[in-house]
Image 1 (spheres, rainbow, N blue to C red):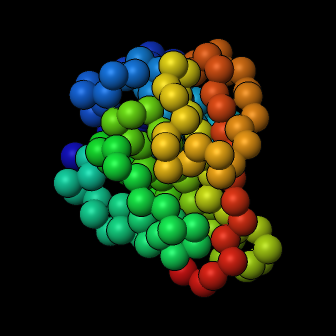
Image 2 (image 1 turned 60 degrees about the vertical axis):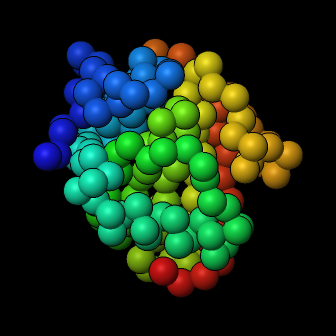
Length: 154
């Protein structure tokens, strides 16, 4: 069942098994606020059990582009299109959020982003491969993020 993420009353619904559930919920709410403010889009998530296609899409890009396979359990996904950009997200139990931003018109504006919830360690799959910048968020505390540009067609 889909869940419209509330960025005013932050909830851990769907993220309860995460050891950093509150921080991950804040990170998810931060994304919801961004999309509402920028695009007037209501950010919704689905349990992985109901959104295997989105998980497969993100997993394929990670594997083909950078040979990345995360050991953490995926909990939720989100996929939607605003304007000419397709967005796909996967939220993992360890506090990692992976997003694919895929511009349908401009191959130079396609990327995979990684965001680490406050309190989580850099996953071993990413350690030493990416530099993480810090960003402060009222909803999520300190978010560390990184990205890479997608070269293939998906």
